[in-house]
Image 1 (cartoon, rainbow, N blue to C red):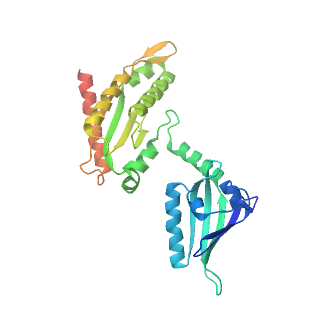
Image 2: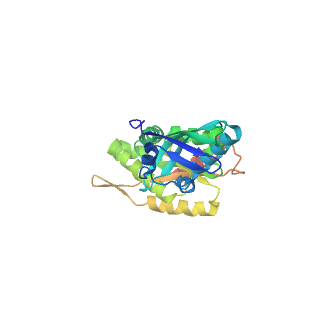
Image 3: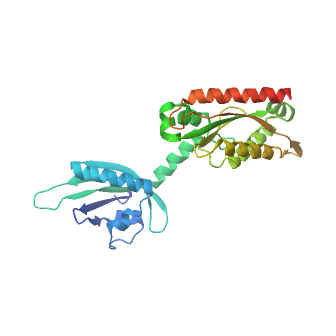
Length: 278
């Protein structure tokens, strides 16, 4: 159990007295054998994990069942750790009912999975979310409702003259422009629910319902002013610009993601035609 970074725990009911093996003390960063108060331990859980733990614990007690949860805690030394918590309700004749189970430190496992997720969902060049993440979190209707609602607006961007930069200066120059564009886009919409590179020189920003359209328009103006600053590449001053299309859902909670994209895309290309004719 020590090699696997696992500890056993027990909590008697109704006095809620905790008993731990050394592995659990290590996980919480507390000296082995130190007095433990369950209320203080519960406060060491991250908020979301605490709510989930309390809910599953109550269900296990009510149903005389079991539960499993990956929970995040803040240890006594301030370190954030992940643990896999298992519990079981036990009632034995002549003994107080109790919950018992195991707690395993899975921090390294979580970090590895997070690194893999970042690689899978992030664009390597710009560091933004990639097309796959955009589709799974927005265009997929089920995940849209769960992850991104309520949505205030979808903004699409397409770089103007990007092909000419690639043709004249090469792909390294184009890549530099894309990275700078992504940095300026992220800085201009820090409140975005999702900022993604969805194509070669195409980007999407999804903002929440708390951003009024007037505020978004002001942010867009500031963003386009920011784009006026040239990009320095090997002694060359490269100019970048972009066209924008915006679409807002009639209901921020119930919307058709594909229909929203179609409207934003149409607005984007209308803007590009206007710029070409200017």
